[in-house]
Structure formats: C-alpha cells, structure tokens
Image 1: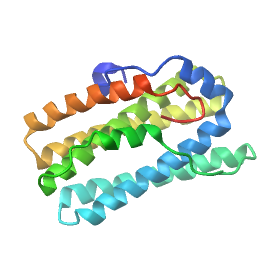
Image 2: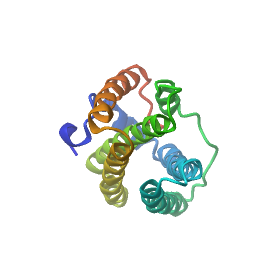
Image 3: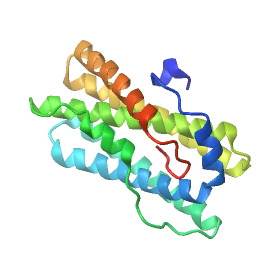
Image 4: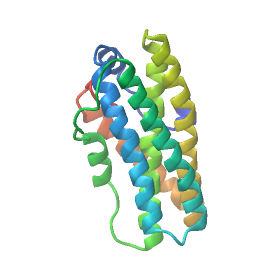
Length: 197
C-alpha cells in the first residue's frame, strides 16, 4: 500500500488520523456517505455506458461491494448507538471534478471519469491504511484493514478499465497529470478529522 503501489504523490498529513480518532462518529458518518456515493457513481456509469460490456461487468461487482461496505459502516454506527446524520459537502471530490477535461469523445469522457474514480479509491485506501495502523480501537482497526484491501483492488480496476477504452500511453500520461493535480488539492485542503477525504 506504499506510494509505489497506490501511486499517490503526496501522503496524507499525519495529523489527520490523530484528529480522526477523536471524531470517530463524524468519520463513520462521512465514510458511510462516501460508500453510498461510490455505489451511486458506479450505477450512473452503467446507465451512461450500457454498451461497454467489460465496464458494466466490472462496475456491477464494484457497486455490490461498495453497497456492502455502506451496510458495514452502518452496522459500526449502530453498534455505537449512532445514527447516519446528514450528508456533508465533499470538497475533495468537488475539486477533483474541476480538473476533468470536458468535451471530446464519449470514450474520453469515460476515461476522465474512470481516472478520477481511481484517484478517489487510491486516496480512500491510503486513509483506511492509516486508520488500520493508527487507531486504538481493535475492532475498527480490523474493519479498516479489510476495507483497505478491498479499495486497493478498486483503484486498480478503474485504472485497468481506462486502458480498455484508450491507448495505454495516453491513459498513463493523463494519470500522472491527475496525480500531480490531486496532490495540490490535498495540500491545499484544510486538515479535518471529520471527513474521510
């Protein structure tokens, strides 16, 4: 899960996990919405690209897994006597969406979105790893270990799928551009322990 695997240019500020541990209720609520959004985004791509058989197959499995993660986060909340609470603004994802290159072919639009989703999954995986390694609650630590392993697979799936619909060299050139842009976004966002991103 180190940089060479996830490819992220900038590690999460180490202060994040310390603040997050003090705000576990807020982290779990935000995490639940992240899983719900991941499932919804997968469904949206299926609806937009029903003709892309490999994409639909990959996303069908991914949506089911993301929704099972949502259910698992809800169980963690319930175990602690907490309810879901309201959805929060996701500044990280909003900033990522601004860096997408608009226009061009349908495949270009798809690849831009697949790479954005790969970034989100990679960053989520990195944060799950921090929670697994650093938080003192053994049950939650194990929970985040299991999700880290799953999210690492998702990141690779999105990247591989992008290469199905565009030349690999072009995909990787754009991927490295997006990694640099994502690092700038993370660097400039406030370090908050009540958000997964």
